[in-house]
Length: 289
Ligand code: SAM
Image: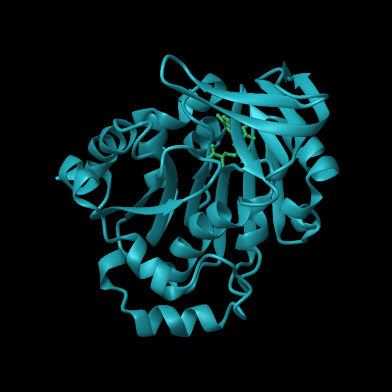
């Protein structure tokens, strides 16, 4: 913890080496541990509430988590229209699991998370994020490497959401070509994969590199954007890849009809935001051509 300026103020810092660092004033350090996989820290930040950091990078915060978790989950599930089985790779804080289980169509949500400690401490210290999702009878939690799971499973899923950290530590495997080939194998005919692909500004190569690697695997490849205050660098990208569901083929009336089934319990996602998120600015679009 860095001692900041002022009396008794304390700060945590997210450092982008040689470029930028963001400091968050914290009231309290709640947990600090080197797990077998990563450095895990949970702090009480003054602006964003409780915050999970892994290897020094902000993963999720109580105040702005709804943006990322709604956009990573409702875009593919509503685009699919009848998602019964969902696979979440990573996602140990439980936010994606919570949002997936809001859909009555979802009969089973499998989460493959490599680090039991993230689940345990997120449940204990960040309970509003999972909000009881881990206890839902439709949830199946597997502690293991997501890359290994998709290589070995015979199961098929309608939606696969890759909620990994940045490509460091155990997450590196989730950015490799064989992982993506295996994910494509685990999707049903109209199945959809979404994958967080970093900041379009701070990690400008991540989205185009992933696009090039993954494009040959699917008929439909798209990116959609949204902004999360604690994901530094403006517009944040997710991939949307599918063999059988064209994101551009979904009109706002269809999206609205499906969204109504969600009882409007969202604070960021809505059909207009869904539709607009796929309209890319030039500086992003030009890299994907
Ligand atoms: N929303 C965050 C982001 O966009 O950076 C990710 C949050 S979630 C906490 C990331 C999770 O992926 C962590 O709990 C981490 O333990 C898990 N993870 C990393 N590598 C993994 C792997 N190979 N298999 C399964 N889970 C993995």
